[in-house]
Image (cartoon, rainbow over all chains, first blue to last red; front, side, top):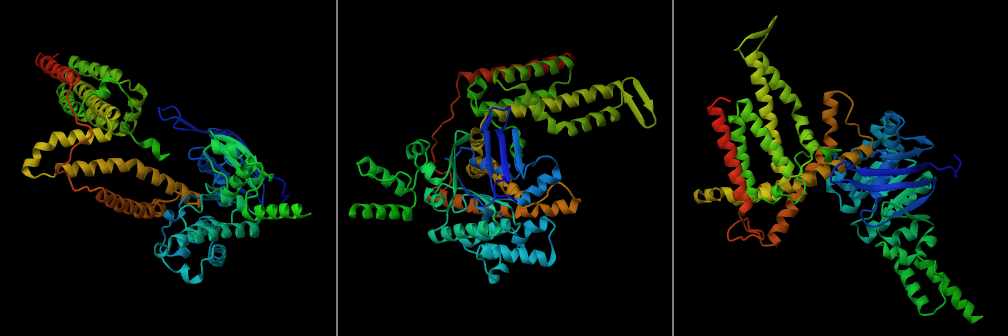
Length: 290
Length: 268
């Protein structure tokens, strides 16, 4: 497939909760977005900005109040069967996915998704082992009960449960929330491994700016039920004041560089990761020496 | 979604009905229920309907939500109507076909039964629409407090009730989330045989029970951390007090009951 054609598109998407009651609430309004294969997108925004509502539209869990969601150019609501099949192609990992584990063994739990797609026998076993491999769950753990694992391991088994369907688009809602530093790094590494191996589009909702800055190639900022910014991390983090106004933070190193600039030190504004910052500082040092 | 099935959900407001003491509302509901059963004549039934409509109007509850509340009762109401229609004898015979016999008395009984059920449901909804669950359990605790003398654990029961009520929305939300997550993994709850559909519930029920136990455990610990040790010596932040409004409400309720008894006596 041509890498420039979008795999999933959202057009004029609006969703209203509890329409017609005193609890009516517009969650997202007039959103237009498109995602391409191989993209690793970070979706950020403060609580209640509509991120979760948006991602639940992408695999047809929520039906738009108005507007369309297109998967490979086709409306995902065109018929019931297609909606159902899209759920296997657009994998959605919810927040705290470990709370959805239910089977006796990890193998069975990971197999739940592909089994629902109609896969069985050797192919099913291969899928489960491949998915477990992506998240670093060894064969010895596959026969254990998921309730006996550690928090980080449970999370990775749950993510494997979605990866086993081998979706073209993988969406994760705060995949690292509540994990320790080691757990966080391994989950992020697993996600990248899957994205590279399958050339999948990955959309990751996150509150940790350092995290999205380090791994995402594109950032979408949501505010007041709409898209406020959409661009590369460098393009987005340049607007650190606006982001702070929206109740979001920027990576610490970006703040440090901004404060230094305010004191009259000539430094670039597009710095958002520590390695890049070091490189720019080294460059500056070189420049002085000459 | 599941959220829409929470019937009788509290509508926040500041009307006279909302401001009434929950104890008054609870006692008035009992008076109202007695009245509904006493009202067996057209005039008295009309009086009860006028009372209900007036209170609904005072509480600014949209008429639509009342009708929506009746919807799930539809089958039950229809069943009662049909049963009463065919099984009541008396008056003149209107229809006599095969095993079906309809008498005028049957039509009347069916009409009153349907009306009564509808009035009962609407009255109860009026209470839950205008009173928050917390206020309701508070009222219940206060009204039942004399039973403490005979060692009924009134406070503990009320606490359990408010915790249960408090967790209904949480568990509904949780269920919603689990359903969505399993749907995202391709689970299908809508098609297939009865056994298949029952089996499809396992991926929902197991995580739900696990999380319900986890929550109960966490809540118990949190309560103990804040030195909760039962009802003894516990004071309240909001003390319930009867006001003139409640006096007026009791007066109105008493008047309704008296009027219905009088009308019944004269057979109107």
